[in-house]
Length: 109
Image (cartoon, rainbow, N blue to C red; front, side, top):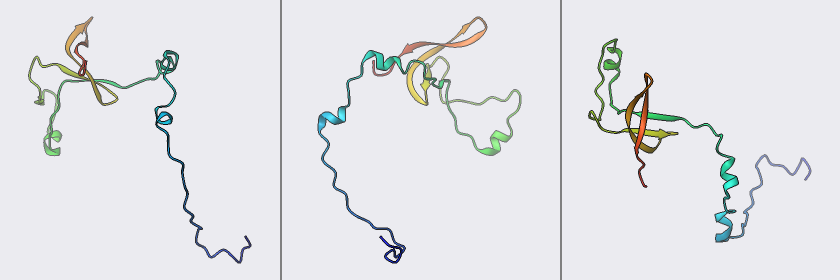
């Protein structure tokens, strides 16, 4: 192509792809050794007591001793989230002066 042929607009051509066969979409089988590669990947784990919605005015009034009412009642299980996805529920426990969560339910199992 010489510089006199270029008009400033890109050349656009259609492309034809071959169909994907069903066995190609599944990918290779996952072996236990493949899963081992993921065991050291760090994940964010949260235990959520509950949620609420507040307006900015009320948040600005918060101070030491303020109480925020949550959408769960006393004794209800807390949600255990991994990367913001619910994976389990449990009860709050104390372990050597620290809080923990004992898993009591795994949804879908």
